[in-house]
Length: 311
Image 1: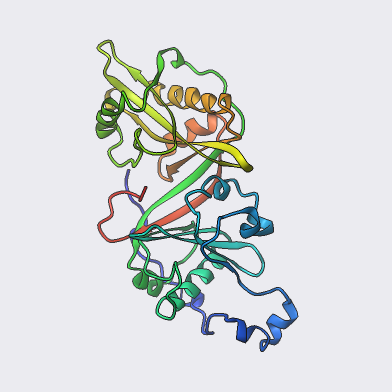
Image 2 (image 1 turned 90 degrees about the horizontal axis):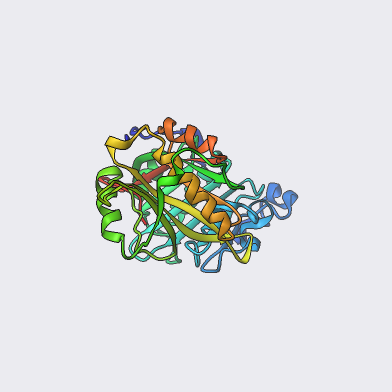
């Protein structure tokens, strides 16, 4: 898929002239004193629980679904609770993820960059990847300090109930992620070479596919298990949709999506989610027709030369 918005947006007005907040400054600021609890809420190296996410984001399905991936991350929220920034140290890179009001997320990013050279705490070094709400105007200085450049725009979609039956489901078969791993990889190499989906990876829940008369996979789709609303609850996240070019436009993608989404709810998933590039209008129409709703829109930034998001 094509990458859009390659130019960096600079917003001088979003660059604060004040120094970042510190505890010893909170009581000296009349404005902050009037706001009482109006200080940044920060957690470092703790599980991402509803308490850490706060009253606004504690039930956010995207964050809760990904909480295993964010374990031990640094979480910062704005005083008005409208924006949140997660900084996860993945060992070889720092991943930054913002939710909420775009302007508030930019404020949190600016503060984190201000602390880069003044702290050895986890989550203060340059980033290997960043996703922020679409519409957030990230200052050029922030992108330069993090050594990131625009990569893609994408959306997060969610379904809360199984879809109806669609044409073509009768030829969709369940795959064995291990035994069929090589065949799945062969299909994806042609049908979706940019995907990071791996049927042999951790937390894989299911894969489905369509074969030709010789058994060759013509289309595939997979799902991972993720968190839900509760310690033991689960959701499914779909990834790795690929249909070989010769079979596109015939409803194969819709059939794969419908079967896999229904399998998730049958297996006990509280919801089923997926991510898609923002410029794929054909896929969006299919997903919306199957009951998915667009819940969040993002812009992602990666190191120069990036060809795909991190896993």
